[in-house]
Image: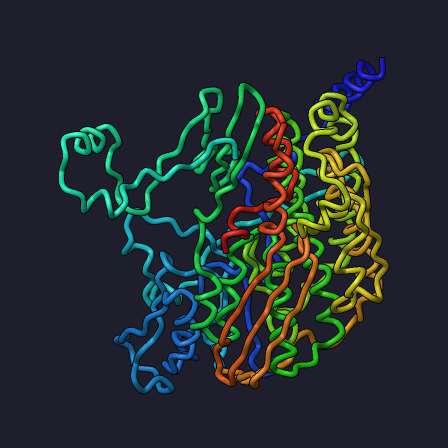
Length: 165
Length: 405
């Protein structure tokens, strides 16, 4: 008897969920919203600013080619290499800037922590698929483009349960 | 072991003897084996079964089971398929660049596996962590513990053929993963803890969002009682299977939820509080049965306790203040050793660091709960039916990658 009531209670618990709205997210159409514009770092206080650790963004007018990001990545993923850029910036005498291989990057953000000139940030862009290995190598020119992201879905909690909306 | 090993390698004297016809006939009957190999006599009734390493249930490890009909007579767990040499790698990287790879063994519980390392490095370098950072760390660690336990619970459900119990925890985990994503910027492998605090401060309005989602999460996991924990079908499969007595649990050196399910009230958060756990109210859940059911129920009760800890930490957290101490670029430790221990999702997790005054540690040794719980498996499976093996094996709260490191 106890077994029968137990099974009925278990079934009832599952059946109740037929009336509950779906919690899952329809991914390519809906995308989760994140706080801020991505992970950033303030070298004056030594504390980061919360945000998603996605694709990097490089500010050419701040980068001095000091290679600190490349050195920070050496023990982690060796994803950052310094390459020559054609343009001439007055703070960048050697005209070298980081190039990031997203086939190797682990998105830890230690390169952002290493940059003392506010030149390297991370953005909310996480869709980085490519058909070739070379397509994952982002040159300084590609890193300078601010990604277009449309992320507006967040978790809503009501009396009847949680949904993404 | 039922089977007996006999060495049939020819000795030096027989090899040196002149080739007589009788000796040649004997040599052809017994095959010549290369040195170091031995023949094993096999019982007719006993069958050896390899579960894994590719079996989705065993999870990158092999369990060599010897069965007599449907009953297990001996069992030999064989871990090591996902050994990555994390400890050796740590000797070639400095204290900061060690962080992203040391959390790889358990990506769901990455804050907790990094916790003892970070505490140890802080003691080596003599850093005083700000108060707010300690609270942020505790919140992150408790959220991570819940995320890990939900994943473990989902797999335990599918091991027992309970598909609903796979879907529900995997979905409700999303509530906490969303919080971790807002807090650290990554869904798994957060790389959030550093010596001297945490990488970034909490985002604005985080306390309200966290409280709302944790409350809803707790309401959801309480619903698991009807469908899973009080379900007679689950109870009939897990109760009184793989019983580990209190004495055996202590003698085998098990830890975490396995130890608490056998009636030993031991939790590192309570017995040796680190960071701000001594200011928070930590209650442990202890069950005395020591069977698979108790071992699967204790982590579930622990998750509710984690929700309480998160709520009280959110109340007590200082509203302002720094969360990170500025370090020199390549910090060096003195000639010193340090051992720190925390409670992870799988039990006590220790980290032993030896420093010789260089920017890189001389040695990093991690003592993990998974490996210590695995030792109990051969004792628990002896005499069980083969069908009960998944229920016993996964109730040990074992994570193959963490055990191999």
